[in-house]
Length: 78
Image 1 (spheres, rainbow, N blue to C red):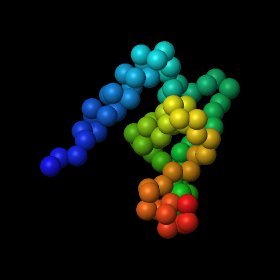
Image 2: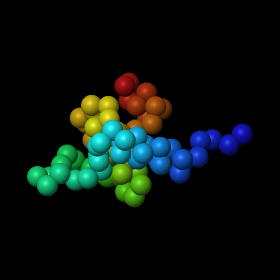
Image 3: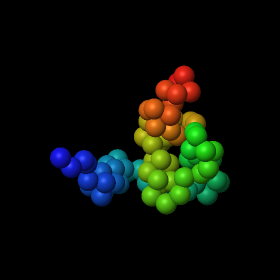
């Protein structure tokens, strides 16, 4: 059984943002928040992960730049 098609998920996310009248991936002229970072390594994400994770705070009201998997957070008593 195949998992979700990543291309379709990304496209749906972009279309949803456009239909809402929000261009979340556009960097504000005054700067922006910190780049999304790995909770485990501390490194900033790169490539499409940066794009996808920067859309989430606007959509869901998150303020932290730190990201991890469910298991990574559970291992740290989160």
